[in-house]
Length: 474
Image 1 (cartoon, rainbow, N blue to C red):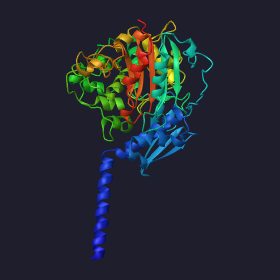
Image 2: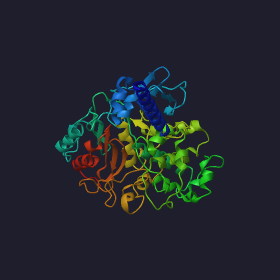
Image 3: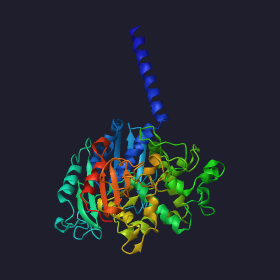
Image 4: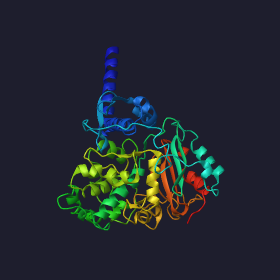
């Protein structure tokens, strides 16, 4: 009798385990978790040059206790990382030339990992180099005590994943780097911008589409050269999605039936770690509202825009090298790297890495309306386009073209915080990353962090204190 009871209990446990494992697999949690670990560690090791020893502990495990079931194997010769969930579900990310770390692609010859040089540019003032000017050369109108106090406060909890965990900060005014501070262990290290990538992806799309003579009010289905459209364009042409314009993608008002969410079973996680063709997946959602009528922040929309940009190129190789030839090189960015998905499209929603000085250069480029040392890097009008509200009312008033408008009096996230001019535009990332460009202060403020608990960092408070310490310019 006792034996039967024991066997029955064992059988029940086995059944429950099968059900639980089956449910996890159905929800793709093990597969996506392995993908997240492989992509994250590969990027930090080979796109940012960090030692792989503590990357799981510093960058991955604090995001979720479930990730502790993952083991990683770093192949430094092949520039690849394989992650396994409970020893069963394996995913590999490999560094590819001009494509960053890509999931489910084999290693490739010619991929060169980033090598950190903490002293790079230290002998030359930014933006030609990376050195800030001496405080003795600051404009006397700057409230130095207030600025320094704001910077010190921003680094409370640096290195602590349960705190604000700042990794880098820069302040620029009048084209001069006043402050550059990097957390211990992160000097000269490219840092992940997460959704700040959207703004840079927007710059690239704006540049290629404008230079190709494509009106941004053109319907997406008509924006591709003959024979260069992805398969989903034909599907859009058959229903109400044919009304979605390129501008609707820039301003996140496509009306598609999708949602933003970052939990284990949410769409963004599935897109980033479960979909080889992110833009195709994003475009597969049906219309829910008329195009142009609703603003909804969607990472998926940024990747559809990246596919529109891709369609303008004759070859993938030209497309993959375009960020460097069209943007990084003219502005002097030496550390920036934008990854693609498995299908080869930029992950414009999420995957740009760069050092703090290079993020500051991108902010300065926005401030200068795409002009750099007398050269036109972006077509004129980017700043106005980026800073125009997606919609006049609601939260959409606080968002522009792949860019935030934090002090917009109607929908800006910082509208109730004093000291932030209304003309401020910003790139913003999921874990406390921000690059704010402020024309009326002729200033750029950069903060990079890995802030899992967003209650630990208030970007509005930081901007308020830093900008209040700087004199007005125009």
